[in-house]
Each structure stands twice: as structure tokens, then as C-alpha cells.
Amino acid sequence: MTDGKLRLALFLFPGYHLGAWRLPDAVPELDLGIEHYVRAAELAEAAKLDAVFFEDQAAVRRSNDMLAGDRYGVANPRSIHFDPTMVLPALAMRTSRLGLAATSTTTFNDPYNLARRFSTLDHLSHGRAGWNLVTSFNEDEAQNFGLETHVAHADRYARASEFVDVVTGLWDGWDADAMVHDKENGVFFDVDRMRFLQHEGEHFRVRGPLTTGRSPQGRPVIFQAGSSEPGRALAARTADVVFTLQSDPESAKAFRDDIRARAAAFGRDPDTVKILAGMTPIVGDTDEEAWALRDRMMELIPEDLAISNLMPLAGGYDFRQHDLDGPMPELPESNAGKSHRQAIMDIARRDGLSILETARYFAEGSYFKMIGSPATIADTMQAWLEAEAVDGFLAVPTHFPTGVEDFTLKVVPELQRRGLFRTEYEGAMLRENLGLAQLD
Image (spheres, rainbow, N blue to C red):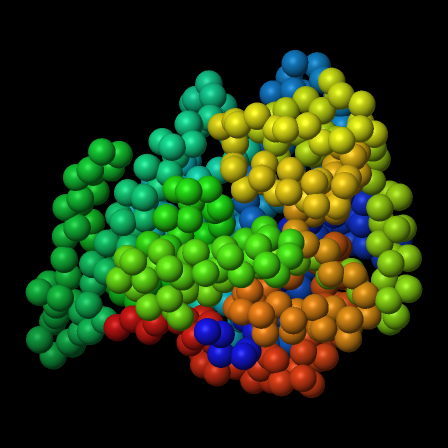
């Protein structure tokens, strides 16, 4: 069951729509300007959103193709952005209730450093930190970390499973009351309320403890987005919030039901695992205006960039060997992320799209497009919630500032008028506002 209230997060990723950044009112410098991120976060908090969320990739997309002399559509604006974990402390100083979540990969990080980093952020934000656990799908990252090729999919998830156990073990290494700060007796912390992890596993050997004590939330919120079999298993066992790429309420409900059943099998309360479907709002004062904006942004996407963008999502498959106006072929299995490959085939088949049309769809962003007036978009969001297909949405605006403003200043107030979204925060910490299990 849902509780009848939406959970909403805002995805901040510059250039996510590969044409919208070219609009006259767009600020493409969002990617390298902290003042723009601050403005977006302030808009999100004023709208009472649960969190802002940042993706991350540690490589320029199609770097290897560039080295090989292939310049075919490789200037992808999704390649340029800061390390999001460096941005969040600045946003913590300018907000007071908004959750702050960032991606960090388990494939190219160390669990002690990552656990310490997000625990620090939880302290700095007074309990508003979230970690998005990923195993990396950008194969160009491998060469930045001493590898020739990307780690095999199964091995990435085996490492991730142990990684998250180490991270949560480190977060649990201090009792909440361990920092006694007893001036009279000269005791800064109680050693008996601190534990050494002493983890020895297949991938990691970590003694602990962290140098940060127990963070305000006990554990920062864990986000995860994986639709493969090992991805779903990991999400059901470890995640507090799960993102999904589903583009219709029926498949979204099936995904949500599956994750909830798996969570219950792990002994977890399924109501404390929140499923958020990604959606890209394209907003107009009328439906006609919204569709006209959608068409205008679509026209600004170069054909070669759209095809080039689709290739890594499909595991490096070269669509140029086919007639681009022909149907989408059956995509072979690859070592890349499984959810994007499946989404490409599902959407192309569902809507009867050609290869080029599919590429343009994903050049707008991977998520389901909600196009229309604020009332029309709210109708769709309400229908998904009432069908128990989701607990909420990850809104992925096309550009800054207008895309962010349209969602926070137009769509969210419509949801609030309908009683579907809060008008004030329930608490001070991210766990409280998401309705998650509280940890001591």
C-alpha cells in the first residue's frame, strides 16, 4: 500500500536533454557553476521536495572512440559535470530540510572512504545525506582506474554486495551516545560504545571504525537503481529508495510489487522501501504549448549526437550498421547496464519507433516523458500513485532554470492543491520526510 502521498526528488544533471541546453533561456553553465546549483536547490526546498539527486560518471562519454579518431557525435553535454559529493556540502549550507543525494560507484571507490564521506555529509547537513549506490555502466571509466576493460556485470554486483555491507557496518560502528565529551573526567568518547568492524571478505579487508562517530540519521539514506536480477536483489536487500525506468503504470507496478516481495523475503518491512519512477516533465500553460516546446527541443538534437548517445546505453552497439529509419533490432547482451538495454527495446516495440526515433527519445533523457499543462501532468502522477505503481517520482527537468522552475513552481503546487504532496516538511531529516525506518 502507498500512504496516498507522493515522494518527490529532483534530478540535477546538466545537459540531460541533449537539445534543451540550446534554448535561449537555458543556462548550460549549470554544470560548472555552483550558484546555479544553489538556486535549483533553493527552488526544490521551497517546493518542499524530498531531495535533490545527482548522477555521476568518472569519464567523458565515448572517450575511447575519441582516442581512436571517431568524432561521430561524441560531444555529449552529459559528459561534463563536477564530482557531486563536492557540491552537496555547499548546498547543505544554503538549505535546511532538503535531502542531498549523490551517486558514488562501488566499482571504482573504496568502502571506507565512501562511508566516511557520506557520514561527514550527514553531519554537515544535520541528517539529510543520501548515497546512490551504482556499479557503473559507462565502460569508459575503466581506463581511468587502471583497467583495460569494464569489470564484468556479475563481478560488479558481487563486489557491490560486499561493499554495501562494509559501508553499513562502518556506519553502525558507533552508538549514538558514544561521544560523551565528559570534560570533568577527561573522556571524549566512550570506547565501549565503539566497535571495530574487522571485515575480511572476498573483495575487502577493513578494520574500522570511522573517524566521524555515528551520523545524525544513523545511516545516510541508500538509493539504488538496478533492474537486472542482481540489481533487484541488491536493491531489495539494502536500498531505502529504488529508482526505476518504467514508462507505464503496469510495468512500474510489477516492478514495485517485485521489489516489495523481495524486501519482505529479506525480513524487511516493504513499506519502508520507496519506489520512485523517473519522469521528465515538459510543462506548458496548456497541453498545446507543452507539446510545441517538446517539438522545439527535439529539433535541437543533432541526429548524429542522438545515435551516438544511444550506443553506450546499448552496450556499445553500433546502430550505424542498420537503416536508421528501420525498426530497432534485437540488442545483444553486453557488459553494460541491463536496465537501459531493456528499456530501449521495450519503448521501441511499444511505440513502434525506428532506430532514429528511439535515439531521439533517449536523447531527451531515459525517463518517461510527462508532457502537458500542470493539471495534465498532475493527472498522470495521481493515476500512477492511485494504481500503487509508485511511491513517488524522480523529476528530471530538461534544462535550468526554466525546466526546474516549471516543475517546482507550477506542477508541485497543483499536486499540493490536490492533497497529494506535502505543504510543509514532516521532519528535519531525510529519513523522516521519506517515511523510512528510523535508526538509533
